Length: 124
Image (tube, rainbow, N blue to C red; front, side):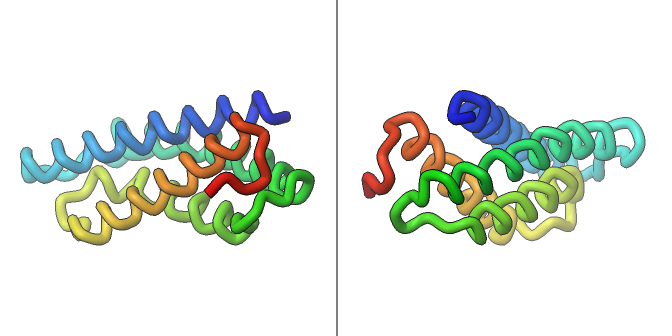
């Protein structure tokens, strides 16, 4: 289970970095992404991994009970990932909110990686 969680978490980190690049590109071009050819295919791919990750992460939290980490952080990150996977394609997306959200997502994902890879229940 830990290996699968680590793999899915790393995939989501990769997608989050892609979303940041897409966001920067969208703002630079000043043009929204095409919903059917760009936004939906990307967000569907992210959603598939994100949903699998949530199941694994919630189960991991229940079993491992990592110190200072709770399932509501998984729920929040899951929701935020879905939001920015779409928002990254639109010019009117708030820059400060996008950056804060992506930073929050990366924090949770990196924290899970840290705990899962080290096998510790609380290293921070």
